[in-house]
Length: 268
Image (cartoon, rainbow, N blue to C red; front, side):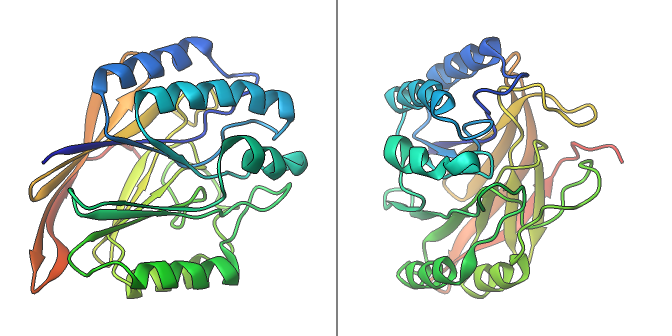
């Protein structure tokens, strides 16, 4: 049975470039798409203030009325002690979601650090992640999401706020057979394939904080028997550009991605 998952990040309620028009477009597009699940990969707010969270929570309620949504905080959400509001008003800092019918498990982590742009997972979360990954059967797809990018992204300028413990985290992810990693943070959509693991970044969905020729966007994952199709969706008009296509199978009782195609979205 096919499933559609939406990956959104970096809407930044309270930012001077936030667009109510783009927010309305986004909600209308999601209504039309009728996804089965939404993953929000951090940065609901601009500065973590209570009044920003009040607006953001109305948006989250609208998302939840369309489809089940899981959210994790980003670096902007924990500014000015904003993590208190995130946990009280929005969600816990991490989650585990399993869909047995489509045979995947998604684990959400908090990579944010208070009042700085960089982030880290930390030893406690790393140990928890290893414990949760060990519970997932080998024939089930493993997906992990957190806000900060784990690999540098093209067309984002000088690299200065990647995860501080990205090497240790990459080791845990690859050693435990994670298939997909979903990130935000850099406001630029991108896809990498490393050690048979897909690393998928979403752009900013509702702001003008855009690098180069990028547009406001989010990602759509269509999961069907034996394949995953990844589209970048422009929030302005709902048009789609295919970013990647993956063929998958369960081989020797293990879930594997055995072939893939990536389509260029950057001009370097």
